[in-house]
Image (cartoon, rainbow, N blue to C red; front, side, top):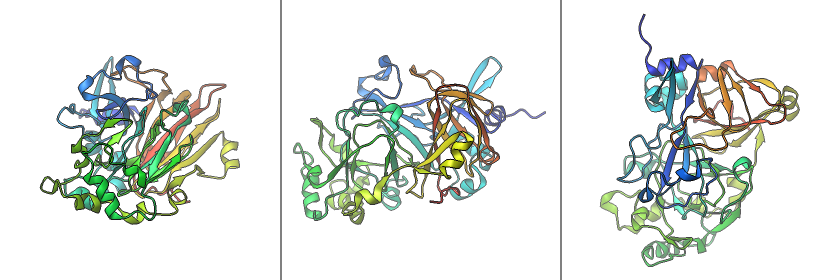
Length: 404
């Protein structure tokens, strides 16, 4: 009998659902908000020069771009495989490459040749700099893909809002290209004051925002769930944040080497129509929307809402299972998921929500559901008589179920 590969063994053991290990990512320019359940002793476990761990990545086949000190496989999700008493692992990236449509579905494999998104928690004590993600055309100049993203602020991780729970978004209507150019030219002169030309919105747990490529944004200090396209391209356009200087190399981070110093290149990355939109809140804000009539779902013991639904590159849902309920949830596409609350069973797996995680510790809170398992329906049992199960689910592009 032919021996199964690790990826095949994982898919078979999980009956179409893969168990993933936590993937922790540091950022040298951020101060952790300490709300992502990592043990207090471990936020700087990679060394002060790497910065604090303020991100956890989910269902990621995308390596983190963290400069020359980036660790091997940093940002890449690992599939956990049990082999008797031994625990083995294989990169989700390699499992997707091997299993192809058997894991992510024929549609996504044929269209993208891989898993084209990932999600993360980012958790900062203060705001991030006003920055931008390039579109596909601009990102291709440095061999990357563009990066649309979206935000959702899970109530379970936001018992406090951090130092600045407001997000700057776009450029105030009436601002000129010349005014923004002056800010960029002044990047190395202290505070370039670019947010003088923006507007901030207060962040509310249980809601979210859509952030297309080309839109300047300075994320606030709430712990944020962030689905996004499989890319880590960005450039920082703000030079001083919370009295911390942003290195100039991050201004030119997404610029081809032969164009560094050309401020017109930076200005061309900006989607001016998006940034100057007078209806920014109306067009970019996202309030949860039920996937089915509430009465129908509640009668079955669950509630499911779309929480990220304005991008064609990904989507996300929040699923709540009532205490003591057993449900079968069907989806038309593969997805990754992370537990936010509660414990029970999902298919063959025990699922639980840890309160504290050591760096390198395995958990039972993150999984990847193959398209076949999603279509057949995933049985979820809430083992608690008092506590709901809450999970967040992230999908790739073109989700057939996303009809609003």
